[in-house]
Image (cartoon, rainbow, N blue to C red; front, side, top):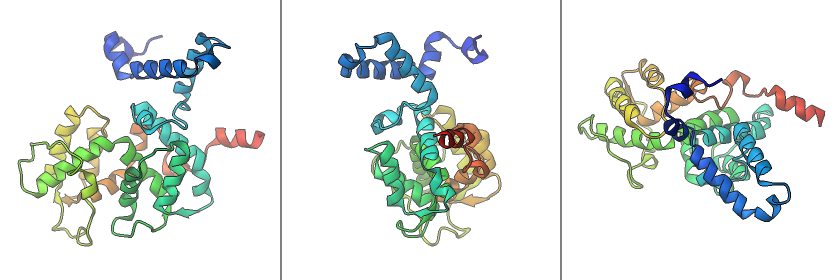
Length: 273
């Protein structure tokens, strides 16, 4: 039975929304690269196994970064894989540095960019040195919003800078390599109430951004809830609040923090092995 969402959309819009073409192109590329091996058991079986792996979220393992970030499903699958593979780090209470977390990410994606790991760590560490230790849960939830919403956060960083400089809040600056989030490193004075921007004005800009952003962005109601309890905030204050919010329900990639160390299905499989 077709879902209401499927019935409400024309075929081309539904296929585009689900990024079916992206997966078809990737499947064909893999088919051509491995045609000698695949010819032994047939093309139909190959496509069946490929799309089963897409549904299960295992298709992103050991793939290049350009592929794991290509679709929202790929990003959610990568987050879930990272959690399931390395949750024992949190279970054992181990604390790791940013570099060590980056090494874990590279075990799943060899060319994972260091810059994304650094940005996620900065949400946790704020003013502390980047070689400080972090818990698995703190890093994971910061990494979740930084990785899944990376393009959105680049635009938010540009808007924040725009507001700080007193420009028109309704003017959205497209971020470039020199105006993005990496320039927003907080200073020791950011905690001051006089720092940052007005939360209502910031929300107005973000609401407009969410309406027209072509990449994934948090639900506007969630952003409003995050900003409703403060009068002013800094860019990194917003990221910290977002990472600590119950954003998991919107993404569907990770369990809530209280259940982070529990994965009954995986535990049962490990016990069986």
